Length: 100
Length: 100
Image 1 (cartoon, each protein chain N blue to C red):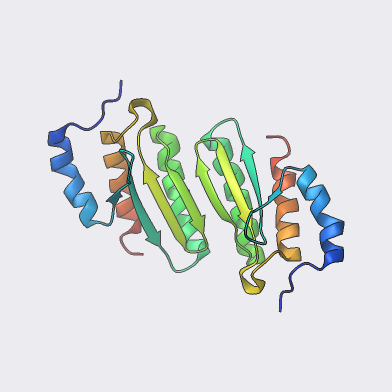
Image 2 (cartoon, chains in turn brown, yellow):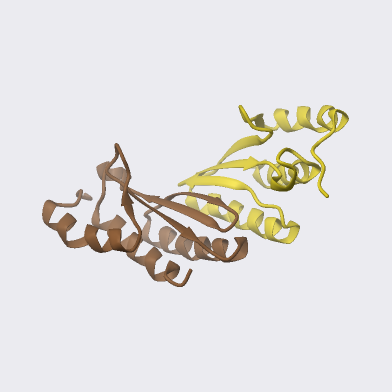
């Protein structure tokens, strides 16, 4: 069973995610970050890599794309809020998106 | 220069797109369709095929995905409305999505 983040886990992980550009979503226990790339090809390359991760981890983003822009929202359906799965997912996205 | 659809083109193409599940977007000259698949793997497979088409055609969707659901919105930036590029793009999506 997936658990939502404890207060301690929030203090441990959310500040560095916020520093990387993630923001808490109003009215939901979720985080969101906008990634911007050079063009659609590069944006979809990012999405393809994230999709392979998502399929393997069985953890899926809510995401919106138009041209070079990708908005990623993370939350865990099973516990209706942020879990360590979202933290790990966000860290993976950061690693890919850091040169964008 | 890309032109928005003429009245004649609208009469020729929009009815069959609507029959296939596309709807006009309120307040914009755009169309939208929701595609639903068995799971994320299948949904992203659809997105990958559409992305290859988009990159080749240099015409890009606005799209949102969560798990097995993909919402595709089409409009042409250059003419601020629907053009034949959107009609062709929608027809391509229909061809891929018809077995979903």
